[in-house]
Length: 477
Length: 79
Image (cartoon, rainbow over all chains, first blue to last red; front, top):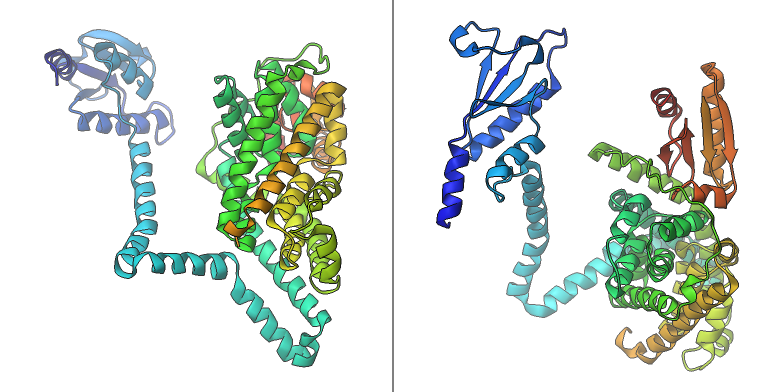
């Protein structure tokens, strides 16, 4: 500690903080919330060596009373100077007064520290077993644990076996050996698996997303510029919840807040493309190497796509919106932990209500492909060795509208029939990012030139990603 | 009093509109209820998430449909 800071600290510690208050409440309420908070605050200050003297005016210590105005209690003095009357000083007040003397002497937020400790405990609880396994059994055993987690817990293979056993018992092994039996098992297993994972995932994801409402995202994005802003836009796109019917308000809201068109497009591309829940589902079906690769290329597509739209200048071709309200009266209401959990529950239920149809349709198509469509047909159209497979998958997927959860069972079945990973990913991306309804929406907000560029960049990007994944197929299987 | 519901016509937006009408009727509130469905007007109002609820020119709620009880409080507290 330098001499200067030591002197300053000494000055703070020698500060004489005195508060006159009326502890016998004048109102009939039992406890005064401000007072409870202040009790807490004085304790915190004490841990930093700052003592606050408190005098109760209703106790008869007349010599301390001097001349104070009884109507404006509580009154706070620092070194015999009145600094606040009528209310208890808040944490901010103390920060201001103390900071006035020494910039690094902030009140520490004990809640934040406690949260950090809990987080550290949880993380270490997760990692320590891995470390122990790693030390005892070497790298191979870590790999087998990961394998177990991804196959049995995330992939729920045990459920597949269980469904198989139950149907064999109920319907006989002869029936289960036919394609109808197989299709039934695929259907039941995939439906249960997706719905269970969906509930768990959407719950946790809605919880995370409650920290990033679009209003906040807008505020955050307004601070950044350049390629970094595109990256942040793409990442916030993953975290911010919004449905396609909100895309125009978001687009116009962002544009009017001075966020560049490139960043907005990075956001708009990434948001439907990389869905946190879908990613884990993707991992459970195809393995985590593919899921991780999907995130990386998805983010890259969003960042580069946004950057191209901005750099070429076509990003200016938005329609004239006229006067846009900049009054930010949408309250940044403080939400509590309980609210977040409620939001998470609501999010789970509404998403489930919205997507269950797509899941059933997707699983049905998947089961049909899995058991009734000859492998040769699929191989001829979409086989990994066919150069045009990615193109077919992309153009077939572009006009379709489906939730990513619905596309996964289809992808799962195609995968089992030997379709290349790149072809499947191209199909999933084109189905989720572009669809006729969302394109109609967007064409209302942007001019044809920008619209064509947007669709072109995305489609080209998806095709390139498809070919890339097919070329590096051997890495994932 | 003026209450506006903003929504592009999706299910949740319609639900919010119905609930607002219900709250106004059941509590005999002296309020005019508007329903704005044009997406450009919604965007111009600076709304990022639909459905949104406006009471006396102040946006009081966005993003989802509040429960009837909460909706009542939202309207009453912003009179």
